Structure formats: C-alpha cells, structure tokens
Length: 495
Image (tube, rainbow, N blue to C red; front, side, top):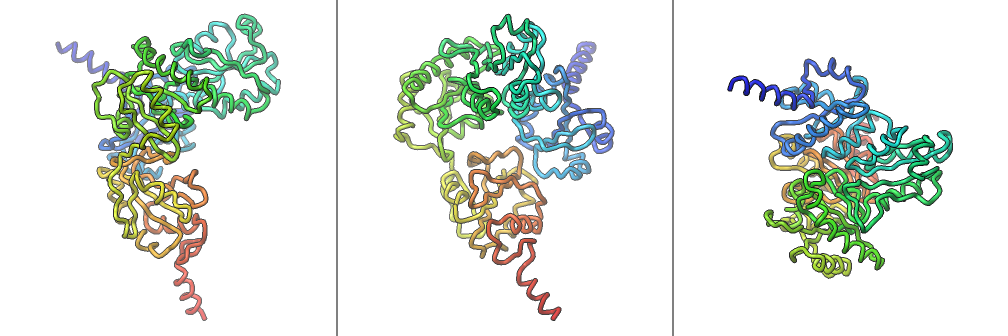
C-alpha cells in the first residue's frame, strides 16, 4: 500500500513538472536557462486562472515534445509579490513571454491548449518547418490542426519568400514547406501553396486539400485565401479561435471530441455541413462552426442555454453589433435551416443576458448588454471602461479610484467613465477580457479598435493617460494632465 502511494506521488509530481514554478528568490536565475519561455502570473482565488490551469498543463506537456521545445512556467502572485510587482502585474491571469532571461512581450494569444501550442510553437522555432521526405509530410498534415504547405522548386524564388512572410504573420494554422523533388513528384504539387484540412474532419461536402490558384507572390492574396478557406464549411471553433470567425456565425454546441469520439463528433457536424452547403450554394452569406459544450459552457449560459443534459446540439448565432440569437426549437437539419434563414431575414429577437438598464445619473456610468452599444460606442464621446468581477481583489482596490476619476471628469462633455460587471453581462467584440480588472479606452472616432489600457491604476495615472489620449483636449486639463486653472494660477503668481 505504501509503495503504491509513493508511486502515485511520483506520478503526480511528474504531471506538475510540465509547468515550472518560479518564486521571488529563483525567478531571475531560472529564467536565464530558457531561450523562450511563457510565464503565467496568477492568483489562487482567480476564477479565470482556475479555468486556464488544465489548458496550461496540456499545452506545457505538448510544447516540451516539440521539435523546438518551449517551457511554460507560473508565478503565484499572492505569495511572490516582489517579482509580480516588478513586471507590473495588475490583473490575473497575466501572461508574458521572456527570451534569454529578458522580458520580450505580453502574450495576447489564445487561452486554451491548442492555441497556446500554436503561438508558442512559433515563438520557439521557425514559423514554417521544412519537410524533406514524404513521411515527414504525412506526419505533418496528419495532425489535428489545419496546415498549409508550400511546394517550391527554388528556395530563393519570390513565391518561397512570400510564403515565409505568410507563415510569420498567420497564427491560426501550421506551416511547412518543401524543396524536395521526390516529395513534389509523389504528391503532384509543384510551385504551389496548398491548404490541408485535418484528416479527422474530412467530409464528402468539401475538399480536404485546397490549392491556392492566385498569384503566390502577393501576400495579401494568400492571406485572403486562408481567411476564406481555412475554416471550411463548418470548422472546429475553440476558445482560442472563436474571435476569428466571420459573421453571422451559427455555432452548434455539443460534445465535440475528435480524438476520443470522432464518429460521434462528425455525426452532428455532417448534419450542420449539409445545411451549410445548401445555403452556401444558394449564395447566402452565413458561416458555420461546432464547439464543445463543456469547454464553452459559460458562453452557452450567456446565450440562454439552461438544459445541460440534452444530447442534441444547442445552436447560437453571432451577428453584427455583438448581437446573439439562440435557436429555441430542438435541433434538426430542418430547424437549423429555418433558424438561419430567420436570422438572416431579421425575423428573430436577439438574446440578451443582461440586467435592466441602470439609472446612470451619477458620474460613473454602468454598462450592461442592453445599453453597451449606446453608452460605450457613443460617437460623440471618448470612453474609458473597466471590466470587473465582484470577487477580484484588484477590482475592489480600483473601484473607489474609478469613482474619484469619474467625479473629477464629470463636467467634461466629451468623455465618459464606465464600468461593466463581466459576470453579469458579456464583454462584446472587440473587447477581449482575459484578466481583471481590464480597462479599455474607446476613442470616439475609432470605436471598432479600442485600446487596452496597461498603465498605472492610480487616479493621477488615469488622468494623465486620458488627457494625452483624448480626441480633443479636455476642458479642465492640458495634454500633460495638469489642471488648467493651476497653470493660470502659477502664471499669475510668477507675475
């Protein structure tokens, strides 16, 4: 019995060893041993950190087996306060990439295993792998992910150089290239770029391999090809790539597992694809995907799903202006087709997971789903908005400071200070909330491209930032954040 427990203990330790644990005392020395490493700064009480943990472990295990291994590490900021403060960690989880012992950049990629592996795999090695044999090709395209392969007779050709730029700039797919005449002769591709969809997702409704037929020296043409074709008729939508789909997107949520249950997964996917092909052939502009119900349960709840035990897919549609729609009828090809047509015809009421519109008479405004578009996307005002959760310690610390900031700027006619409870309402696209608190600045002339605020969280820091970034100069503050009245008083004193 004792021996069994010892073996079990070693097994647990082996699993945990995939993710390194750094402390204040060893961070500087340990980080030096890695050419590239991703570090997660977390807090044990953080809900998003708990959700990330199993995905981070899976990614760490896979990345250690890469051709160019990449390590993942974590730091508990509730204990290791010195190193977290040094790197300006103000929300959890915060992920940062380090190279040769030095901070390189913030990690802003996906937060699930597949996405982390793709992004960090590229960070750790070449963005495009050279394939020298047919076996290497088979192994490469046999993975679970979609892949793109360039077949070139001349490594110095404009096509080959452009392909490398494509691989450097595209994170959602795996890239490889070959100069081998033997590989090209066997596969019948020469001086071509080919997209290979995962074999596990092969379907009679679409081609598994799609050749690019345009000018392969034009980078924007290649990017457009991949954007249009990579997802196919019905892609596997994950937590990492969910933001990359064109709209309107119709997503079928059920138990999706291409590894353990590919037959069951494709049973429902094929039914979605049959509808997708019919509507696509009619020229209707609609996009389709499948997502795993368990991994996206929080998202499902925000779309009105309350019956977790149903075996049939639950369908949610995502349209423009962050509107979403849920299909109330039980899933069938007929009900899905009707739902898609009704959404496209604007015959379905949007679903809102939202509290009532609040009384916003005070200086600090409250955003909910129902008033977000009018409040935050107000074309006449710049907006600073905080996304928070009630249990977050940093959010509680920031709360009175945000109130004070709003009070100080209450007479500014072209600026709004707002907050949104991310547990009660959705943060719509393009606002990506991955830790709390998250603050965004939405200039009135650029609401589609809000800027994430990453500066200090004292009132003075926020005032200086807003004074500098405001579309038009604030009435009460100059561009450096100094009160205009104070400046006049100083000039009068000097006279």
